Length: 493
Ligand SMILES: Nc1nc2c(c(=O)[nH]1)N[C@H]1C(S)=C(S)[C@@H](COP(=O)(O)O)O[C@H]1N2
Ligand SMILES: [Mo]
Image (cartoon, rainbow, N blue to C red; front, side, top):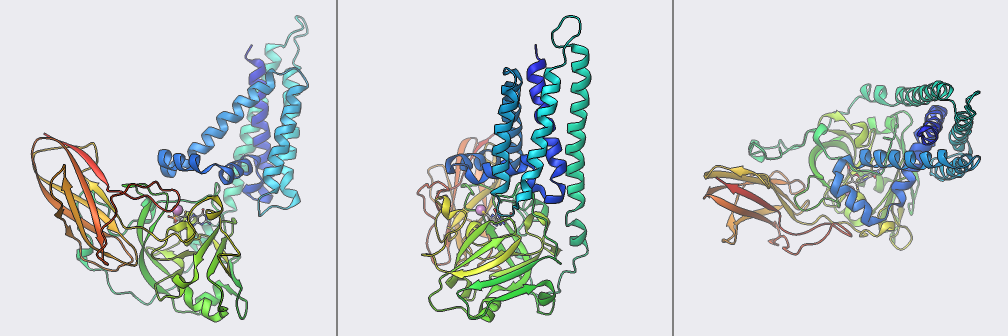
């Protein structure tokens, strides 16, 4: 009974496994599974994407993979139960979708179709063979020969898929990154001790690389070696230039501590992190290329064809916009953009922080658009004033008496001048701020609360260095960043 659906599922496994192995020479985007996954990511309706990030956070990719696997298994089981040769036809149709997904990726060549075609061919052969395993006596499907063949096909699928992934991994840039010699930057002003209040449960002033949030559309982390990397600067310029790592190494690097924030960060969320970046002032490169007067946007593109449109005036106004190659004393982690990315204080990542960056086109907002703006997000992406309560966590139970409340607040490139705390419907009272290091980074705050037993709501609000109080109006992340006061609900015993 379960033989037919099982035949479909095993055959689908063969499609994916063989596809994975054949994709090795063409890169992970040629594998049917990742090609379809990337197409899903690029075409996901905004509401669904938002829900996925809110629900799964940085595990959104794992959630997508599991979801895809379930959908594929369900369809394949159905294909196995269809009258022959309809199941094979359905495999063929899905194969065409896979091929379309693979060849329409920006990095595709016609050969990118090969892994899907060969995978589907192998899958159809296996499907037919499994469905034909007739019992010579009873005439029906024979259990013995079915089991043998199913087992063999399953082993082939898993072995091919695993081998494909392993060989693919061996071709990655880990070795190149380990050999990367981080430039020695001109030291920045030392970060004062008082910038980090070191309170239990409070995010540290510098976010360690392994804890730094990761957001991007790449299902497989792009592998770009420093030797293959170059950055082309072109468009509305006096002279086109191309920069390689050799060029970079002849320049003096700088270091700057900058807090990055994702526009998808919900109020109280953790898609924000602070790192010391090592890199090169972007403005120098732009000036070397010579910007034409009527340009107003830099359209940056990545190796994996993500794009961001950054207002040119922001890049030229003197702030520390960087072409970064290092993060907290390390070469950029591969998932954070190795070998080079952009970092721009004051703008959400989706309009500015292009990882694996390879191309800067100087252009105009009325001529060009970028990945997320094409999907309905705001054009300019300035970061909004925000605060977060880190401790006590919402939902926590604490003992009556002195309770240390603490959190972070940010309004990059303007700075934070105050944070107030409100307990239930009480008055807003001033929290104590950590020592300010730079207006481009977040600031910690803390408040000692004399907590009486009962259920309480803690709210926080930041005031930026212009004296503007963070808005109490709640707004969704779409289209240009969430607003509203962060809240923590606590029970005092
Ligand atoms: N190539 C590429 N760069 C990208 C993105 C992307 O999807 N692809 N996402 C951007 C977004 S939305 C953010 S918030 C930051 C996040 O950087 P991080 O992953 O290093 O924290 O990267 C930006 N750079
Ligand atoms: Mo983002």
